[in-house]
Image 1 (cartoon, protein in one colour):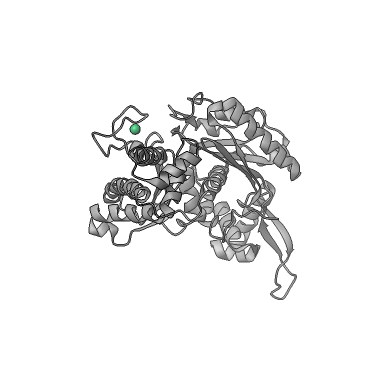
Image 2: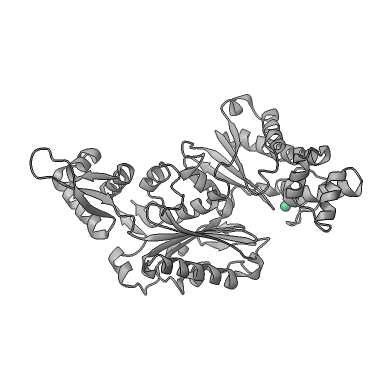
Length: 439
Ligand SMILES: [Zn+2]
């Protein structure tokens, strides 16, 4: 894949790693997976756990120590003779950067090799300022973070970046992003390589990244097939199929915001009529509220409009709803109903066990989730909804940053030619809240 290539000018540290992504053998992968899960093991215990001989384990462990992935610490329990040295995972093998880029904000975290966040910053940026400006800020913030924690620049192995636009995953390029002028086919990895020449740069759509966060460390850790719906300025869907993100042939699977829900609806920014996004996302909710004020249907919304100097947002509608305004609550219900109807078709088609609703509008009020549920149950097959759960994303704004970290970690190792290392899939995220900042 083009965006996974490593430039030829590797520095000393990368020469120790070898070329990233690093290819591990099956026994190497199993050894790393088990040690990540249980913490520490002796060589004998490790050999018994992965079912290989003592001589094989000596060579597997030796190679992993040489690569810097495992290290020896302290002494284990003795079974009579000399106490054996125990093996542990080396969390400082390298570091990754997770970036959750929104239309108006940037959440950026530095994490160690276990995915534990050691520094995190949230800054206001305008994605419309273009890639040079925004990527320049990202590089500057990472340089400051690694300086604060005394981490050498060449220990940064990978960047996982979630962006609010359609991404051709194989190349890491944005294709016709509606809210990101100047980013069309911009070589994000080339820009970052000017500062971090050895790092892998993996770019994906923000909704896929949020779904990945929930899959590894949130409500999706025990699910194989689920949908993550982001409702904000737009509406998108991350698809988890058989325990992995499903991106489709070109990377735009799940772009449900442009499914038509009303042939007589308003024109969407994509040029089509009555798209779900144009009917039910944050701006549509606000537009309907302004219309209600003009028609003198809601005194509470009128007060909000006046207080906000003629501007209403979905948040104002949420507040009016919580103040008991029936018009605001009807607007919220109507938006939920339309989303629910589209989800009903997706449920019939895909049969997920879970649907998570995230994004800025997801917490607009209890009516929203209730009417999404009603819409789905009304129009889906009984069999497909028998065990279906529909909930608000428990990770909230953490889903994007955790997913971005996991996206980066996923690509550092390859396993028998596959892009996703199974040991990362099964071990990271099993512990409680691994994304919480330590120390
Ligand atoms: Zn559209």
